[in-house]
Amino acid sequence: MHNNASSLQGEWLPVCNSEDVPEGEARGFLVADERIVVWRDSLDAAHAWRDACPHRGAQLSLGSVSRDWITCPYHGWRYDIEGQCLHIPSNPALRPPKRACATTFVSEEKYGVVWMCFGEPAYALDFYPEADVPGGRRINLAPQTVRSSAPRVVENFLDMAHFSFVHGGILGEQAHTEVPDYEVVPVDGGLEARQCRYWQPAGMPGQGGGAMIDYVYRVRRPLIASLTKMAVGGQGALHIMLVASPVSETETRAWLVSIHEDDATHSDQALYDFNMEILMQDTPIVESQWPKCLPLALDAELHQKCDRMSVAYRRWLAELAFGWGTTGGV
Ligand code: FES
Ligand code: FE
Image (cartoon, rainbow, N blue to C red; front, side, top):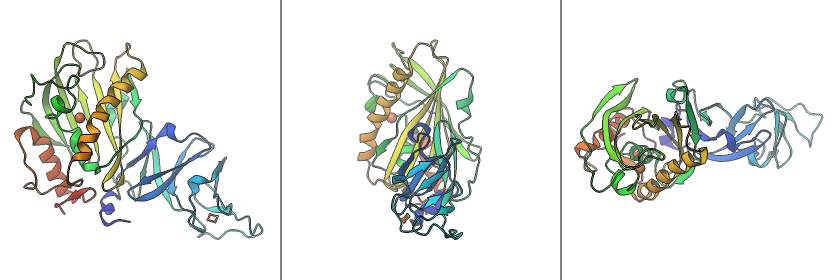
């Protein structure tokens, strides 16, 4: 494993949306330079393992799932849900030894996402309580590849000053480019940006005519950020979690999990399209940022009052010695 991957050891990392792995199927993903297979057993539980058979390293994700077994496509070794090999077809009388065992990882499903942890999780998978608000409808975007580091993707999510330039006509416009000052406070071991405000011509699904939108941003873990747009003009609050799955240090799969409160007028597809348009507008800009890893030394790039949250994020990552996708801080 890459050196900087040690900073991911205790982190819950998103692998895919729950719907990406149907029952009885296996799918392969890259997470932090590791091949990961996710497969679903007969009780619908998702398992995340190293996607390599201990026999000769073939990809288990190319194999087949039957009830509570996954079978390697190369020589047919069959594994149970603990990763233990139960059957070796070329030597059927043999009881497979204990060490004929796949490498398994802790995994859990929440918010419609399959999460895994390479080590022992350092915290509970409960960093998006807004998902449980009554009357909230959850929309999970499909993961999109962003050829940049996960910290660059997270920082973009926390940035308001780009709205009028990257999301013109939706989240901002040329007549209203100012970012009023806001405060950043430490909360629950993470950061919160409060009293954020920005003029948005169509900042909520279906909203027209423009409004000053009040925001709160939160970074609860190094790669997990969320925001709340307060209710405005008859529209319910909108919560968005950014899900950043690190593929490599300079490639990320990113998607948004949004919770739309009290919205009975828009179809799921309309809400999906609204969030996807914004994510797709951000992607080429984030991919253009150089270096791809986020520089934590504060003199590496220039900062302005509106960058208060980005600066706090960089400082916090440096304090945590968070090396994945960053430079200059550790
Ligand atoms: Fe998997 Fe041989 S490589 S059974
Ligand atoms: Fe954006």
